Image (cartoon, rainbow, N blue to C red; front, side, top):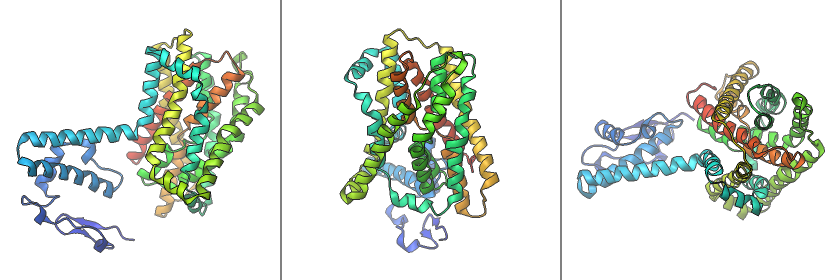
Length: 421
C-alpha cells in the first residue's frame, strides 16, 4: 500500500485518506493545527524529544498533536502566560512519566544497586523472606501469558533470518565469554558474572521493542526470542560448565545436570504454562493484551528484587566494590554489545539480501536481537550457581545488571541512528 501524504490544511492524501481524520483550520481562529507559527511555538515550549525525528510518522504526529492540544487548552482558558506555563508543566510531567514507564527496568536496577550500597537492610529483609526465589518462574510465566502465537507463525515463513539469528545468538556469540574471563584487572566474582551474562540468549522484550521501533519485524524478533530462550535450556549448562570449569586455576565446578534441571523448572515450565493458559482461554488472552504494560512493570519488579536481595546481603557481609572496578565493568558493558552489533551487521550483509523491504526489516531485527542478552536468565543462573558454589558472592550480579543497562542504551542509540540496517 502506498504511504499517505499529509497536508497541513487538507489532511491526509493518497491511498486510504478517506478513512483518516482531517484537521480543519476552522477549529483554530489563528490558523491550522499544523501552521508554521504554531509549530514554532510548540517546539519552543517542549523538550526536543517531543519534536525530533521519531521512527514513525504516525508517532510524530501523535506527539505533536498532543502539544498542540495542550497549548490550545491554555489559550482557550485565558491567553495568559500563567495558563500556558501550567500546560507546559503538565506536558513535561506527562513526558517524564512516559519516559520512566518506558525505562522502568534500567532505573529500577540502578535504584536497587544504590539501596543495596546505602541501606542494605531493606534488601536483607527481602532476602530473609525469600521472595526473590520466585522471580524467575514469575517472569517467564508472565512472558508466556504475553506470547502471541499468531505473530510467531508469521515469522516462520522466512527461515533464513531465523536460522542466522539462532546461530548467532545460541552458537557463535556465547564464546565471547572466554574473552571476558581473560580480563586481568577484575576479581573472580565480577568476571564470572560477566561470563554468565554473555552466555545468555537474546533479551525477552527489549529486542522486539527496539526492532519494531526502528523498522524491524516484531514477528521475527518474537520468534527469535522464543526459540533462543527455549534452546537456552540446553546451551546455558553447556557453555557455563565448559567455560568456568578449571578457569584460571581456581575455576568453579558447576553441575551441568543441576543447572539444566533448574532451567527447565524456572524457564521452560512457567513459559509453557503461561502460553497454554493464553491459548486455552480467550479471556486470559484478552486480559493479558489489555494489561500488557502492567505485566511488563510487574515482571521488571520481580527482576529487580533479585539483585536487591543478593547484593544487599553481600554488602552487609562486607563486600566493597571500588569505583575503578565498576568503571571497568561499565567499559566492558559497552564494548561487548558494540562488537556484537558489528559482527551481526556484517553477518547479515553477507547472508541476507536487502532487495525488498521485508529483507531490510529482517536484517534490522536479526542485528538488534542478536546484539542483546537477557537479564532474567542470567540472574537465575547466578542464583543457582550460588547454591552450587557457596563462595560465589552477590557481586557476580553486578556485571549482569551493568551489562544490561549498557547494551540497552548502546543498541537503542545505534538502531535509532540507522547504524544497524
